[in-house]
Image (tube, rainbow, N blue to C red; front, side):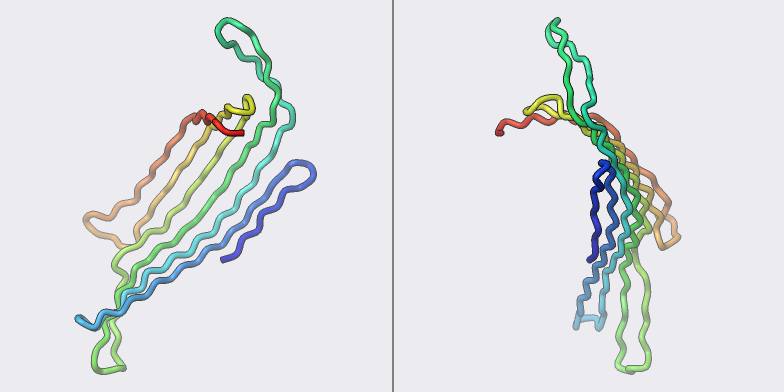
Length: 157
């Protein structure tokens, strides 16, 4: 819906996003309206370190690489809900019930370094915490995280 992304002259960057989504469907077979909605708010920041030198050894040969190191971090909150509304013939009575949904928190951190014009390295850490809106036998808070190193090969220039 709305986003703001800014990079300053001193290599600092800031990002703010607000996303909203709503899908509504009507079923005549059971007189029911299903509404799926989500809202998301993301705040991020980053910094570019200029001309970082790293010494590498390839096949016994020492080589120094000079490139920029990009660090970014962001935090997000997303609220997902699915609501069922049962419509009756009496227009004064409407039964609404939240049937599923989660409140999700996310943390993303990454460091990007370009070794050459064709090879880049990316270190990343992603964490997601999900809290369901419903409490029940199968509804528990859960947390997932992944971290790793990605080597990007660019075959075109």
